[in-house]
Amino acid sequence: MAVAHDDGRPVVIANAPLLDDGRPMPTRYWLVDVDLRRRVSQLEGDGGVRAAEAAVDPEALAAAHDRYASERDALVPPDHRGPRPTGGVGGTARGVKCLHAHLAYRLAGGDDPVGGWVMARLGDIGVSSAVESTAAAPAPDEHALATGSGEPAPAFGEPARASVRPELAAGS
Image 1 (cartoon, rainbow, N blue to C red):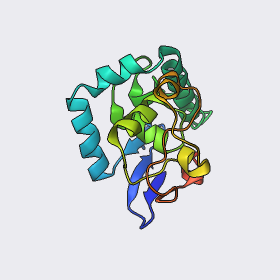
Image 2: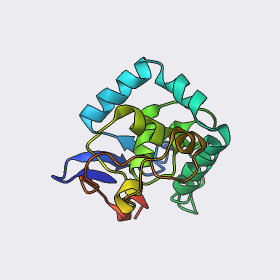
Image 3: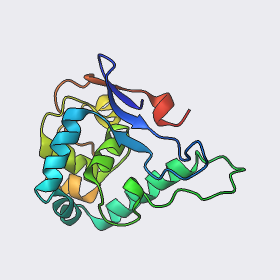
Image 4: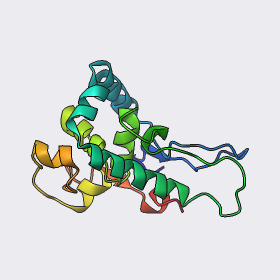
């Protein structure tokens, strides 16, 4: 579990880059909170994937995909000779495929402008990401979210409403 509610209920899990049989698992962070999954699905159903892709700076999005892939790939054992995971967030190397995956990455501490965009659209999600838990900063403007300027997404609710387990988010 990479992110949990204060009561221990999982919000985001961290997957290993390889399944037990050696097949690749491109999706490192998985959103498992039932309410958040439902809310993000509604956002996707309302055209959120296209809207997020249009709102977020393409270079910031490409950089997020690269960071995600690098973090995941660093966990592949050096002696692994089989297929390797590919792509970035949600297994894609370009654009936006899955808002759930972007939000999960953001909540687990990833610098993901799409995850920040999702958080801004959902309002109070009852969970603080690693970014929001470590910095109590004023909410960025839309430009900061769209450009991926490194500013944290707005903090929604109390900063400690969820805990990020760094040892798991980092792959230990």
